[in-house]
Image 1 (tube, helix red, strand yellow):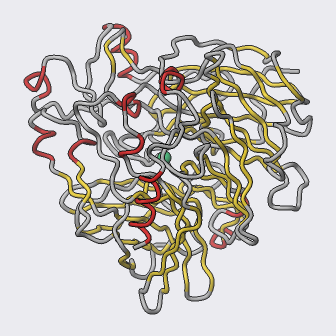
Image 2: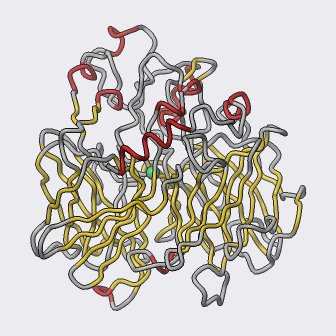
Length: 501
Ligand code: CO
């Protein structure tokens, strides 16, 4: 019912004035071939001197191979952006991940691989027939853990890079844990204080092998990068699982109600991503896997929706709460339409929902927290897996309707208060990253680091917002020398990986 209301609300704004121009938005998808390093000197405002450490961020850097366009930005070669902060200064670097596919395609000057999201090798279906070899593009996330910088792509093993120079070392099997062809997800969770390890932090990640049934493997690593725990679980049916939420006792997945028809993929007619179909007659399954690998996996059903990302989850008594960005259906990929020409009004918007699972009765209650279009959630790192108060997330400039993300929304879950900082009309935002101020005690005492594409100057800015008050002007805008194409995920580490100062 609420779904219907939301749909009609969105349709009502179809004719409303758009806060951006499509030409501006499209230019943020132009390939970026430059790779440079420099001290950022063009700055409005002041970088907080207490902000010390390094922001790493990943995303597609190329939307074409030597002029041959790729079909979807999710198929683009991973490019790492690094911004290192020290004593009020910031140093920028960017490098492509030198994957085997990147090196071979750049040398050949043409597309050699099929992409998961629609990029086909030239030559039609014959050239793609039975070609199941996908390119590990290392473009989805980048983390610094166990003294390693890892570029993640969920279909295959990570690549490690030198955090100082961004030189690619190569595929990393994590001390022999991963075998060739093994997937390793791009959405690990950082547990700030793991009860099983005496309160030490740990990294929790997963891998998914999907088919007629699906195997989920959970991996937990200590701060040195050593494997602490590994356990595998077989789940009935095909599962498309991009993200996971954790609590003290569970790893939580949403098994979206989709069907996968691999025949068109194997025959070369369609990409794997295009063979996924939303099934509104099926339910969404919430899968709760006990963290230490003991006890039974729990399945609970809720109304059909599609989820890429979770904001957070936590336990309270016999209940588990999960905050997730939900779509009414899978935003399916039309094979004939250029992604730059997408009709935003025709695709489902992401909205923030809360799911409340009663473990005793397996009943699920759900409610919408915010019906604004939103994506790319962030919270204070100490609240991961625990109850929390403040959420930060990319959103649209307008209150209703579906548009590109141009603003950052802060939600106070205690009071319901919302604050918005908008880069419209000519700015387009990526994922915010929350950095706590050293020594802070309040949950929102820190900064939001946001890459913003500035169409007016065809370059990107790194904007630093005071997370306590998004209504005020940014603390600083760092104007980069060139644009960074819209990307995916990143993380901040308090370790500084810039030049000696
Ligand atoms: Co993601």
